[in-house]
Length: 304
Image (cartoon, rainbow, N blue to C red):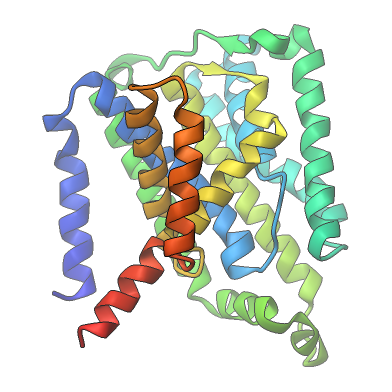
């Protein structure tokens, strides 16, 4: 079966999915969509640009807080607040990226980490605006979107549209150049391509998409907390991308689905779920160093 047919079948299955789910599992399906988009946004940096960021959760958190602050303090409708979130995340990414992409390797990673912790401190201490440690609660979509099944379809439309745009970008000349930078930035620089400009544009794009994911999740969960901006939150998209296979476009989507489902199932049976999750992920990474999709490709190629 060719790829377009598989995509159509997968999309139809995704549309029909909530008909067989309870409200709880519909919320979990929404979470899978959100984190799939979040992981893909991170993979723009790592898988395509070769840039390992330790602060990607900054943009996810900014997207969530933008929705919450504009809706709760600004009195704006959630629709307007939602539309504004990726733009605010883009501006934040541009400011952070202006300084961060001037460095490479571990220095780039540590700069992104430092900026995220600055934002985390603001979220924690600016209690009048962010609610401090209590966060901002009580977000609720109005009308049909208040029902989980309709919000799931809304999230599905947003995520599919965003993934389609990212897919088009990474398979464009810009995306090919970006992958060349990942392989050998010095050679690309020698042929006259502006390396920093490509990395900066990628950083802003990744931050924008992460902000969109954060906005979706804020409305779905109804809450935003400072922990969304903490350093531990940035480990989530890294694990998802590596677990699914960061050398492929669809890998982070698969990794996000597996990660969320493992967390939900295991946490429902034991309070020691982080330990069990850690062991399972370590085993999966050791057995499949190229991720789930990398292993799938090897198996498929071996049968030919």
